[in-house]
Image (cartoon, rainbow, N blue to C red):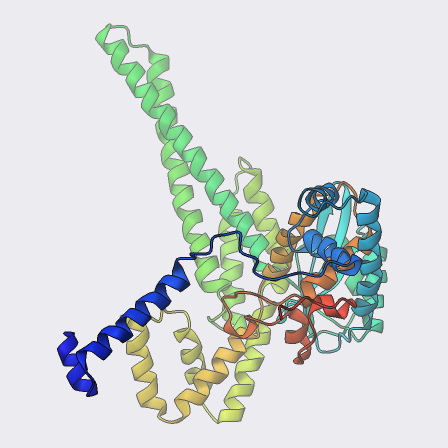
Length: 464
């Protein structure tokens, strides 16, 4: 905009506008172009032993630093010499306070637990996470992972109020036997991730087998062409090509069928918003039978797959029964037909950016009128609160790996410190808006708490 127009609009002189422009330009220069250089003192930090111990703790937990890395940093940047033993001792002091806080937490609000086992070398680490808050309530190293060990730790959790509606775990026998012994009334659902991964691995293996046979068939054709040019084609070469051609067609047909069955399993049977439990069971059994009929003993992975499906059907589909019950409750509460409730649920399977989604959205909105928004909100919440997989505990395991690789052996005091830290640090970012800026403990209890350093007795530095 011309200066004259700005001056006329604000009823000031052009000289005044030029002066203000100069002030603004100088402010921008002072802000983005530091004329005083990088050696300017920004603030003074009072260094005390307590602050250094706080630094040791944050280096180990936030920066994933090793003991010797902490020693080197303090030596090179702060000219302070300490030993590896001092670093270990300070972490042990913090771990003792952290374990007290861990043990004092009430676990009665946990409605669905996710259990898993990870390993540091040959040592199993038993893990438990709340499905909705991601609060880690179990992180213990044990010599065994059998029924007795799992049962012992689950009984300890029950003493702190742990009584979920159900749990989700993989097919670990010791884990399931321990829960059956200690919590016989709590069902243990199967994790759909592992069975889908097993199914997908078989599809990929079969795909590579087909590609290999196709490559062999093409190479054999080239050999036959070269032999024909030399007028020396042999009957064995033709016979081998016929065998490869038949095998390729048979494997290609098998691959096509298995891929179709896999897509049905992913998008129809184990999808969250989909048919009723009875329909899922029928489709599940159909897929299992089709795989079993195609098993001629050539692929051990196929036999393991359909046997796993046979043994885990009820546990894998248990989430569907939970969802059916929630939808039935919505039907009663909102006085709506169950068919309409399921239509709204199926709407969540479509992409919100697609035309199909908004066409169905408008159709349901016109048919349900004012009740549509209440029904949409209730269905969304029901789907959100129904878990099918122990993905969150797998996510926790991946974060723990960043600490486990730093040491050869793990102690429960160190694991307790990690458990405390991961439960009390706030999520800096999250795909779920409700979690951003909150810690797992805050999500579990619904109440804010002090910074994790302050809970351990430290006073955080704040610039004057």
